[in-house]
Amino acid sequence: MNIGITVYPTYGGSGIVGSELGKELAARGHTVHFIASSLPTRLTELSDRVRFHEVEMMSYPLFEHQPYSLALATKMAAVAESENLDLLHVHYAIPHSISAILARESLKPNRNLPVITTLHGTDITLVGADRAYLGITRYGLRESDGVTAISHALKNQTIETFGFERITVIPNFINPEEYTRHPNDDLRARLAPEGETLLMHVSNFRPVKRPCDCVEIFARVLSHDIKARLIMVGDGPERARVEHHARTLNVFERCSFVGKQPRIADYLSIADILLLPSEHESFGLAALEAMACEVPVIATNVGGIPEVVTDGETGFLSNLGDVEKMSLDAARLLSDPDLHRTMSVRARASALERYSTDNVIPQYINFYESILAR
Image 1 (cartoon, rainbow, N blue to C red):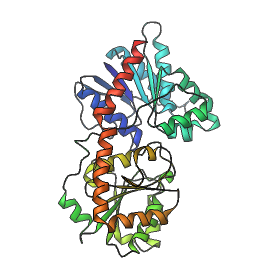
Image 2: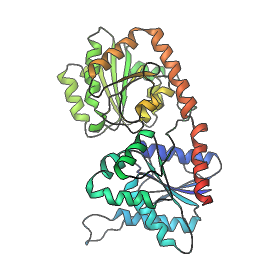
Image 3: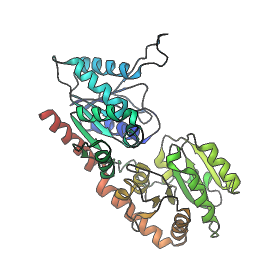
Image 4: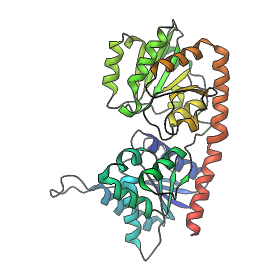
């Protein structure tokens, strides 16, 4: 197949999943054309089967804001014709599905270009649920030829918000060869110079991720006389607030803020626990990546996280904001090597059994074929 994929090219779950999906499809003999404003962060190599088409923005004094949605639709239509695309697969309903639908309609009646929309979370929970965008998001869902969601929790929320039920759940995934625990003695020695255990958080540092809760949990873990350090991976609007909070709790010197990292598996491979105290997660990709690297997860029991993390087996789940329980769970894990090892083994086994690329990518291919068969 000849597939067009559009993602937000920034640091975030939807861009990561869309980019990795394209690479996996190319590895299985399909040709993938990424259509976006810039090269997605995870798309490090291009080839005959993985191509990139940049959306050019028009600068015109009449427009206070550049009309990206129209520029994207124009580019989608042009690439569809020049590259003979079989379908467009867009990640995020707003504005990508609207642009794709406009591109599809502009090509009629000369060609049919099916549009598949994958929902990742905030396109429904935040943007789509805003009354100003409710109608146009519902239109994008209804007019898409196929709609997928990354978890049953997100599917149910979409049904509740929009009354739209024609949704197929295809979960996020990991490549078990890329996400596997591998030694990195130099990195560990740099981040844990005294052999401390490492608690880690990976996110885009937005309020919904509640990164300040990680500092709260960490401070309580230290009160149990556990030698540990907190590694904060990523960047975003909450970072300065988190750093200030760490100073307020007198734990800043035991925290490392390493910013965005291109190879998350290198960091997860030296972690002992992943902290994911989010207010909402439609899936919890960071949790899945950690589990594949044999890292138990301490997380909140919200959204799609319970579909990924099995409480008491591959990690521990807590109510939102219950930093005391999360700290006790973390301290228990770090104080019991046998329990930690058992959970680590179970975590990887669960990740591979349910979410490996060999299990999930064929689901996308079958979904594409079913849409094209219509």
